[in-house]
Image 1 (cartoon, rainbow, N blue to C red):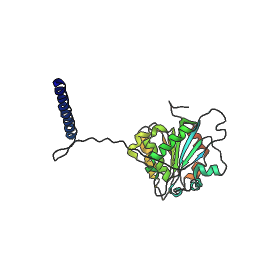
Image 2 (tube, rainbow, N blue to C red):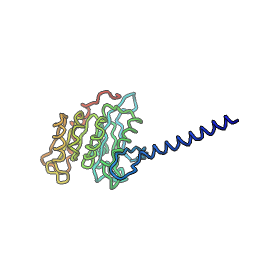
Image 3 (spheres, one colour):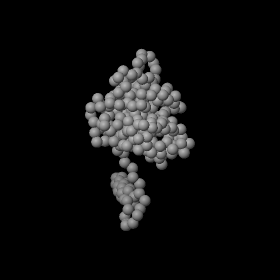
Image 4 (tube, rainbow, N blue to C red):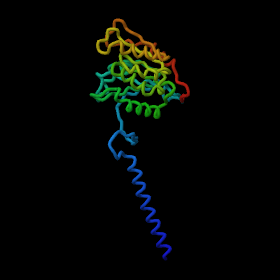
Amino acid sequence: MKTVLLTTLFFSVLFVGCAQMEKANMSSDMPVRSGQHAQAFEKTIQQTVACQYLLFLPDGYGQKRQRWPLVLFLHGAGERGDDLELVKKHGPPKLIEQGKGFPFIIVSPQCPASRWWPEQTDVLMALLDEVTEEYDVDTSRVYLTGLSMGGFGTWSLATRYPERFAAVAPICGGGAPYLAERFKDLPVWAFHGAKDNVVPLHESRRMVDAINAKGGNAKLTVYPHAYHDSWTATYNNQNLYDWFLSHRRDNETK
């Protein structure tokens, strides 16, 4: 009995001592004196994202086992809100409403009122992941385009996730030239009106120049007589869609 009591007492003391040492070690990670200290921080954050969007599935979708290229289209500031009919005002959604067919799955999300596409990159990538998982998407042929605010969104999203896209086409937008190296393996075709009095032409020009200076593959089409609306001519141009389809990312699911 004595042995048991001594042993129990020993382990009790040991346990208390270890607990106090652990507490002391934890406390040692925190500054205990004035001055500047090197620290580290880590925390898991959970986020719920949501948006509404238009989905276009091409003729023949679902009739046979086939994966389809996808275009993610970002509208301009005037189409924000909670009325999806607004998204049909310009770009591919407008052409689809007019009866035009496309050989792509086309995803056209709507940005909430008073928000800005470059702030919504987490939402857009979550949406792209969801659509890619639920539909027959050829992940080697995912393309990104947008106009005005959507042009800025295109530059922003492609800057953060260049590996997700096979080619991008920003229209009358702008980006961060100091991050141009991220586009060195991503084909870019930008469009802008020479007389644009909303988003100056130099916003597109400096991005294209910076990308090419880093060894990238970027080109710029300037409409000499166009103002801010450089998107109507662009989305009416079949060459844009042919250009998209001429690009494919390697090592992706086909």
